[in-house]
Length: 271
Image (cartoon, rainbow, N blue to C red; front, side, top):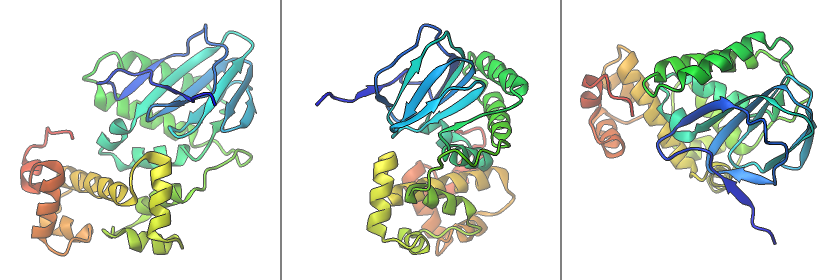
């Protein structure tokens, strides 16, 4: 059996990479990516793209979404024009704007999108490509990326295969909760499955347990509330379903290395 190729187009310290699609790439062998999400936008191209054995004829303009667990390959028969965005999980986890995380969740449910008016989309790609040359432009890059995803998510494409895995439903459920529960069993019950099955699905899709995903979400929300809300630490602890301030403080320090008070005081800190 031929071993599946695992590609990594980033350097160790890169969390996001944006560049024009290489014109010399026409055909690739089936491969997966090394734990990153890839967006590919073609303003000009012809041929086909296969994602998890689903063959998609390329009709430009088109925007492809390749999740890290998916196997895909290209077969292009003309010189392509477009852009590639590679996004590591660490970039998403460091975004304190919860709306961007929701956008990533929503767009990753699709294999591709076909924008009708691509002028704005192309301009956003050009700006992203320019701004990403400066590592200090994180806020600008996040803003442009949020605008790009927002524009793409305006597209209605009911014909396209959507991902309805338990893992994605779990993430969707976490985003929709007004008050989080620090219990995997609670969410497994809401999804009509067992904690063990939920955990297996999460492991298969993102190499993390259901409890690790829940912990990441709780900590991300806690950091956002500490920096951007007027809530005191007791109110934040309650909103995140901790039994008391002390429990929340111990939990936060164990995972972050600082108490909530220390983190809040150091507002320039980005995890």
